[in-house]
Image 1 (cartoon, rainbow, N blue to C red):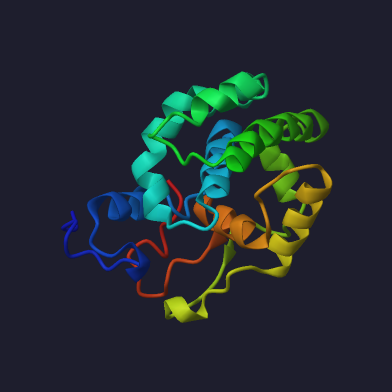
Image 2: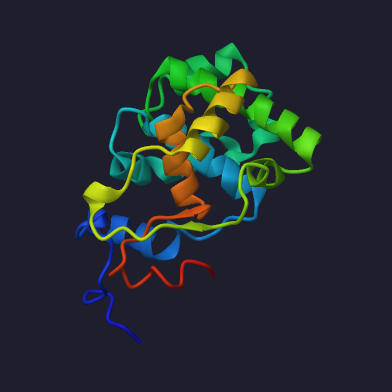
Length: 193
């Protein structure tokens, strides 16, 4: 067994234990479950303009506030719920982001109905999953790609908010559809459970 402290990781996660755990156990591992896919969609959208570690530290608060990331339940939230969320110090209290979570839940359900699952929808943009990139440094990793451009454009057309191409690219990395682990990262070759 490799020592947790001596594993070579992508250096974006630094030495924060929460960040390292996320990198080792989740980031870049292919997600096949729509609820997990929706969780990342909510968290990535909430992250816009903030650091990812800020969102990771609030993740459990989001889980409690947003019904365990259940899109069906969230889709029924009202403006009164939004007002209550604005008092919740455990999440990012940005009215537009909170409202977009509710809006996005509704559109997420529409995509599920049309494609059978959100995962099926995403797969329509790919020839193969994952796309495996071979970056040696963080500077090489792009903030977006033609695929994230196409997906975010289509999702915007469908009514999604706070899901531009940069957030979309981060989402695709997180859910393992794009493998951007650096070449020397211990997890480059084994991103899938």
